[in-house]
Length: 187
Image 1: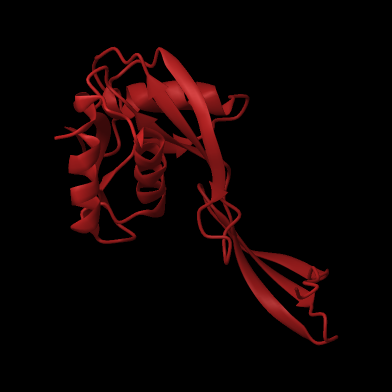
Image 2 (image 1 turned 30 degrees about the vertical axis):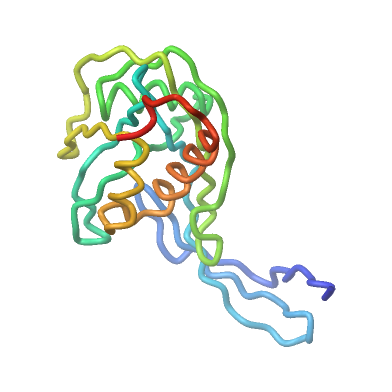
């Protein structure tokens, strides 16, 4: 196995500061002694949620994503506000995007969304014991969609679910159900 070395930072410059992200250009030293530049998008940590209703259906949101220039079917997700825990962000984001209030949460995993260029770290949670309510989101056009796990897998295979957090969350949850004989998890 190769001994992979870190790349020490020789210099760092913020080349863009925005409301949501910063972009930093780092000059790094490679193990061979040469140097190169790395462009890094600095993004705060975020949460994503696999919200499961009592009947086993999963709650998704359909929304237009400008960066992809298309409507995607996604798991609810969002930022962790200052002073807020990841679990508190799950509860807030669920009300904002779906209207559902979360009774119970369970941490599933954390992952980098795209570590080749961004610092964004996602915390994935399972949310259960959901109580319906009215969504409070005012800046996004969101449609709430509920699907069985099998229905979600079909939509994922059909390309309607095309973002990494949703694919990972659906597969993570489906894997946890593998071998389950509860008919509520099929369509």
